[in-house]
Picture (cartoon, rainbow, N blue to C red):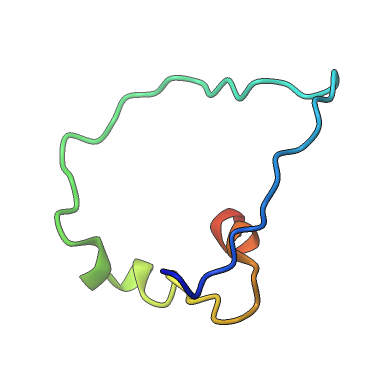
Length: 60
């Protein structure tokens, strides 16, 4: 982890920002125990390498 760049700063307060307020819904009674073997998850986890874009990768 020492080779990673940690230069992300929080945004300045903005009065137009709103707190995330999701709608509630029922959850599935089952849970995928192995999401990384599920084809829908294949190639979703990316290594940013030397791009210093961890925030962008996390939000994408």
